[in-house]
Length: 273
Image (cartoon, rainbow, N blue to C red; front, side, top):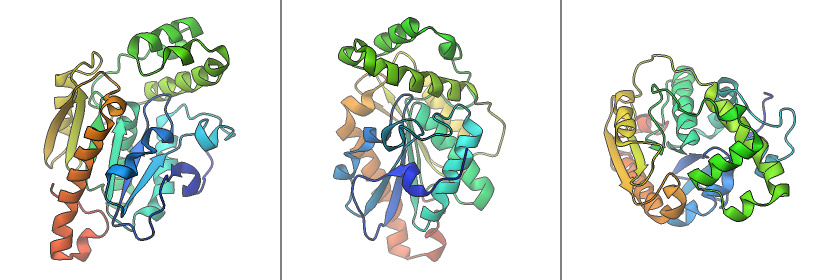
């Protein structure tokens, strides 16, 4: 992948002149930055929401080469490169489903390059990274099989699934994203030092309580599990409650930095919630 400026990688739906912190939001498979287009409304006005815009969607619909990212390692490399100029403030990572794996991978790469970490990692609706992914066969599905899978899983309206022109655009994105997920190979590394919160839906048939609890093994810091009513896409149906959790966690994490005014925390040293 070619190196692109941060403006192309991160969509902002509100301008923050003097941000106190930045929240990087990573989308689920098939999703774009617009998933997070209203998140700033539930956060403090000085929190800069940077929603990841992956190639082939949103403002990058015609981003070639390449049109889509299909391998996770070079994608993470590009994302972290684009992120580095924005690390002059404490940062937080939130990722839903595929986005949780991207957020975790970016946190590891960021630590490898700079010794910095997000102040908090929110891993939403995703099995822990070391656990095998059950979706390895998805990229090989026919279009009809893929549409049937999307219908069963929810998150895509029946109107969109029934519209051939929309599906002609959407299916390649979905197929590419599941190819991206299939390219992930977990390697052992020291635990992240930042706190992790794993979020789950009470009716999510794809991610179990055990899958969420397994994230505990990826942090040497604090760990919590938060459950929300809903299926795999509770991030949309329970958006306000999810944002409220994120907002409270951010404020609690930033409070010690305000009290101590410690320079050592100004570049994303882990903060206790």
